[in-house]
Length: 351
Image 1 (tube, rainbow, N blue to C red):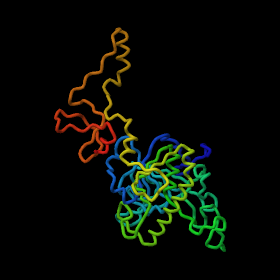
Image 2 (tube, rainbow, N blue to C red):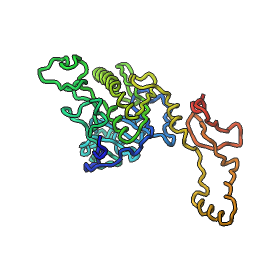
Image 3 (cartoon, helix red, strand yellow):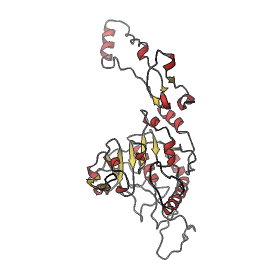
Image 4 (cartoon, rainbow, N blue to C red):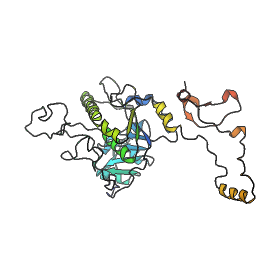
């Protein structure tokens, strides 16, 4: 895709140039599967961790980015009003009113009045459908196919049989998902490693199917499972293109219904992401370092040594606090209260 072609916009439809703003970085997708409740979510608040939520997953964890493709009123009002979250919204939904999910009525507030909102354009059924060779090249964000379009690309005619005349399948029509939109948006932002959390991607009528309270009919469960099946098909087809572009996708959801990508424990993924970041950094002397070095050179004296730190402020590498939360801190003079340093993955996982 031509890098000069805009893909993100403001509410007035003027281009917003944020492409590759996070080039080469990692991001954690926080989806809505019930497994999301089993994660130690405090670990995702560690400095250096970027998170990307979809739909109503912010009910469980407040992310840095958020994406939706459906009706604006399907999702919590606080998601749109929270300036911490960069929301990616299909244009022209900027004029849609927000639904107050506590008062249970529409608010006199539209998306264009909300902070930190970025708009993108979705593909049309007749033109921009899902194709592996153009998925990362289209000037719009593709999120699947409408019901009249087969996975093979065939556009259904009014008098066509149930079987696709082109590929012969009867169960590959349509199916759209926010996963495809989030994947493309994260790529355009420059992220090159994506960890998947809460991507259970399988539903049953007899169980909770979300990490938050939301019942579904048997018909909805059946339709969602068909969408997950189609997503597996599309990800298998898209995988060579993903790898060609230097994008790495890793599934951190144990027992996920999405089988395309390799599995990694989410704690290991977090450790790999933040292990480069110092827990404590020296601030003393940064403002006048050059002046002191210049004065020392004039006096032909060696550069002054850094002041020694007493036991109360001696920095440590990384440690686990109560409840296995990844925290910052200092060594204690008391052996019994001294926190545990992290030097290996086992230390990080609290084993």
